Length: 488
Image (cartoon, rainbow, N blue to C red; front, side, top):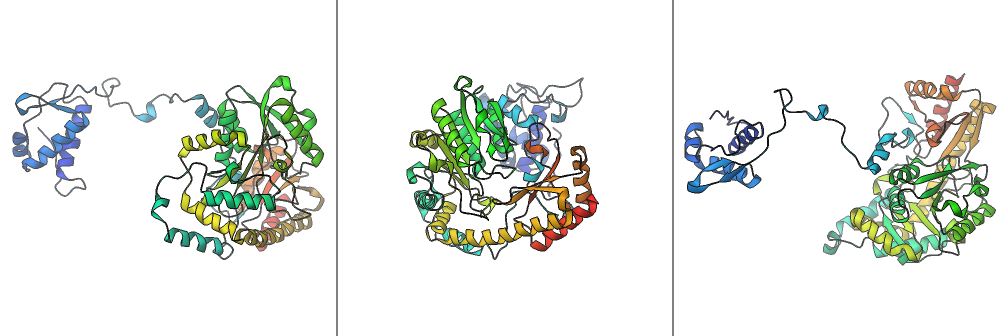
C-alpha cells in the first residue's frame, strides 16, 4: 500500500496514515467490504511502529470508516464515496447549486442586510468618517467604565462562570428600573426588564414572540432597516406609514379590520429624519393599540442625548393599557462591543420573552452585566452621560455651523435636537448623483452616507446622513470644507 509519510511534517505519523486511508475510502479507492492490511503488515511496509498504525486504525473505526471483523481483520465500512462528475474530481462546493434556505434566511439575504452607514468595516483611505452609530471611543472619556469592568473581571465569583438567568443579572435589572423611572419617566420594576445582546436582539425577539408569518406590522417610512428586515424575514406584511415633520402620521394607522399586530416606532427621535412625535400623536398611537389589540415597539435609541429643551417623555410612560415594549441600548452611549441592551415589558409578556431569550442564547454575559449594574447604581453612568452629552453638543453645534457656513442655503438640516446624527438634504444635487458624490468624497478621505437606503422607494431629493459622535470638532470642520469643495 503506497502511503507517503513525512516524518518532519506538521501532522504526527499516525494522523498521516489515518488521513491517507480516509481519503482513499472517501474517493472510492478502497471499496466497501475491502480488507485493509493487517497492522503488522502495514507497520512493516511503512517502517513505523505498530502502535502508530494501531492508532490510525482506531481512529478509522471510531469514525465509522472501517469495521472490525472476526480474527482481528479490519475492512472498509459501507461508506458511500462522493459522487463523481464525468469521471473527474468530486464536486466542488463552488460548483454546487445554491443551498436551499428557509424563508427566513432567504428574506435576509435577498437584499443588502446592512446599510453602508451601519457597516463595521473601516473604509480604506477614509480619514474623516461621518458614519452613523460610531460612538466616541476616547480612552479618557470612558476610563471610569473601563476601570469598573476590569475590577469586576478580577473579582469574578465561581458562580459567575456558570449558567445565569435568561432575563438578566438581578442587580442590573434593579439598577435599570431605578434609572429609567428617574431619568425617562418609565413605570416599571426589575421584574419587567429582560437583558438582551443589544437592541437588535430585542427587536428580533419581539418580532418572533408577537408575530406569525403573514401578520401585519406598522413601520415608519423612512425606516430603521434593522427593524424592517427583522419583520420581513419573519414573513410579516408591512404597512408603511409616512413620517412628516411630526413623525409617524397616526391619521393613517390601519383600521382594526386590517389586524395589524404591532407597530415599530422611534417617537423621541425618528430614525433617520430626527423629527419628534408630539404628545397628540403619541396618545393617538396608544389609543390605536388599545382599540386594535396591537403592540407597540418603542425604540428609544440615544434619547439620553438631547441638546435643547427638557428630556422627552417616553411613550411607555404614557401607556395605561400595557401595550408598549420599550427597547434601550448602551451601544451608542458606552461602546458597541459591550453588546448589552434591555427590554421593558408589560407584565403579561415577561414569561414569553424570557423563554425566547433562553432559546436564542440562554443569557447575556453576567460579569459585564454586574459591572454595568455598579456603573449605573453608583451614579457614574449619569455623570458619564452628562459629560458625553456636552461633548456631543459641541460636535453637533460645530457640524451645524460648518454646514451653514460652507453650504448655506444649499442644504436643509433635520434632526438637530437629539441623538448623534443629522439628516441633511442637498439642494441642487439630483438623487442619481449622490453615489458619485460619495465616491469622490471617499477619494478625498471623507466618508459620506446616503439617506436613500432608509427609504422603501428612493426619495425624490438627495440626502446624506452625518454621524458625528466619533469625530473631533477639527475633523468635522475639515470634512465639511472638503464636501463644499466637491459640491462647488
